[in-house]
Amino acid sequence: MGARPYSFTASQAVNRRDSEMVDRAVIEQMVRKSLQERFTGNSPVIIRPLSHNGGPNPLVVNVSARHVHVSQQDLEILFGPGSQLTKFKDLYQDGEFASEQVVNLIGPRNRLIPGIRILGPTRNYSQVELSYTDGVYMGIDLPLRTSGDHDGTPGCVLVGPHGALNMDRGVIRAERHVHMHQSDCDHYGVHDGDYMQLKIDGPCGVVFDRVLVRQHPKVKLEVHIDTDEGNACHLPSASRIELLK
Amino acid sequence: MGARPYSFTASQAVNRRDSEMVDRAVIEQMVRKSLQERFTGNSPVIIRPLSHNGGPNPLVVNVSARHVHVSQQDLEILFGPGSQLTKFKDLYQDGEFASEQVVNLIGPRNRLIPGIRILGPTRNYSQVELSYTDGVYMGIDLPLRTSGDHDGTPGCVLVGPHGALNMDRGVIRAERHVHMHQSDCDHYGVHDGDYMQLKIDGPCGVVFDRVLVRQHPKVKLEVHIDTDEGNACHLPSASRIELLK
Image 1 (cartoon, rainbow over the protein chains, first blue to last red):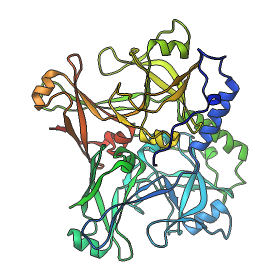
Image 2: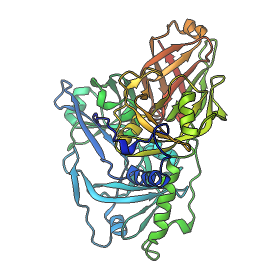
Image 3: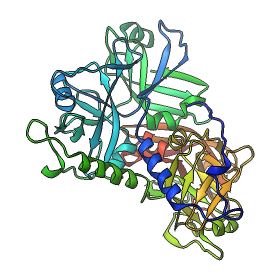
Image 4: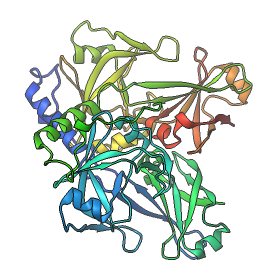
């Protein structure tokens, strides 16, 4: 998400004052190409260590792009009997990884988002995590939930290379949260299930309220926000990050 | 952005356990259709009166989707000599409107976003306002600016039905701001150019820092945030909105 130089070659830019009419076929080809690219090659998670916090562990804020978790049973429906998730790249938490496997998501308005990455390892449930931006597009009224809390959540259809999976529930907008080891809870004086605030200073400064504490003995201190949140505060230009009780 | 019922017809959903292989051509057709739809028909601004504030005027927060402003000269390059913007719908500020005219945006990575709406009336400069989500996709490192401040900003190419326009600058991410009448400034005790905070209570509560005050004798009190910000706080589920000095 860093700066990319802006450059343009003459062949890409046509000005009506200086040249002939734009070739429609060229534009149409560009539209198709760009639309196809729009939904592929998304990095699932952007890792950005931002500050030390005086505590036992560094504070890291990660932006989670839309992604999917699957059970082994559902993985085999999508990718075939005996399929296994294979590693694309490691995530910040030990043992967690973005897999090479991606699926297509079809929602109630018959719209589709292709190429959503599965995060591994497999779980004992399948779950789709989208942003509200995705929800508006797909026509899914996303419930705000923590992972695995699927009562009354909407479903969708996932399509893989072997077959399609009817999910009758499990599509959520993940509640912003912070993974904490017990030593982190002790440092901040909080408990599993508490809510904290995440303060992002910078030109697009934001204080995120209601950051859920999720304590687990095997995790590293890490805040998860989604792409809407990461872009609202423009995390790349943040000057200081603070987690507040 | 309200709730939409979730429903699915059997013909749209195929489960590998229950039926034959998914028809690739059908899926491909859906992908094409949905990708085309992705960038069209965007409502340019969502208006949502949210609270009274004890002041002389109601507090309104609007979410601005990506949009374009154009000069009359540039409009004629895009739509032909003598072209005029025609009204699609009124915006909250008197005299401002979303036009029926839309253009395609081409950026440095040769990617394209089609169907960006022009807001009227014409101005004495052309300007493209994108979200950081759009900027990441397009490969444009968006500067955070107030309208009309174009020094050192990147450009792009806009394509209309008559021709293409080389913009050598004017592509920005608009700084979040609040339009205020003098009576609003008096009520809040602020001046043009000051910064305020916008507090959104709700399940995705957020405090937006650095909301720029833009005083003008002819405007109605109105906060403008972009789609990233509107979705980060999930404005539709907000329970209370407050503007703080």
